[in-house]
Image (cartoon, rainbow, N blue to C red; front, top):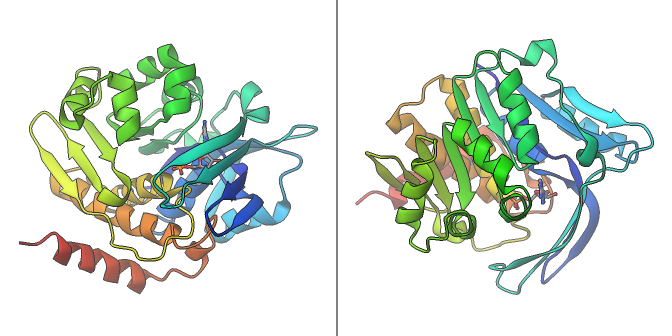
Length: 301
Ligand code: AMP
């Protein structure tokens, strides 16, 4: 079916209790596109980088089969840079810096070949860019959108307009509370449903994710990992795996959505095992299927 992903492609500096990496390949769009590529062969990325962006990083995306016609490279521009530091137990992440750089002047124009894509994932990016993509898409079947504290705080008005137009909003627990001012997550989800989306998925880190609609509730467990190297991008991988699976089966029924959440959880669990997308280089479809079955067994009672 194909998936269109809008999101950032960045140079990340990440500090964990054990390690520090500088200017590694990152970005919400990058993680989501690679995650989706495990399920669907046609992944179209819309993003922007500067001329400081290493060619070998672009090559990694190509190796995952990601279509880069929509990736703009700005001459004399600087790539988006982000830095984060994790607490000892990985439960708290402080953002050290967010340098938007080329993203500030980016006005995405969808390549002709992207316009009819039916499955659209708007990963973390300025909400105005998310709206631009919605407006240029001619045949959307499912629009899934992610956001984060940065955009809730900085671009609330544009974000509200985006949220009105999407089918599924994915965000994490603290972001759902920030967006609604409601501490109870179920109430927060229903407040969001009143503003447009027909489904809200709230990620709860090591406690899994919940999906809420007016008439359904589902709780997906997290994969029980013992060795965490770097959680950066886990949320984007969850969402990318989720929409990649949906596109691959071409269905958005409740039961397929639930399976997609489990496949998203599986891809996120691999991502956490190493920095950037290093672990994705070696993940096999057997490994994905094994973890899917393990999660199925965990949730069975
Ligand atoms: P996550 O761990 O799912 O929050 O995703 C982290 C990734 O998102 C990193 O690779 C960052 O470069 C990227 N990122 C951080 N802040 C932003 C932002 N404000 N907008 C878009 N992408 C971001």
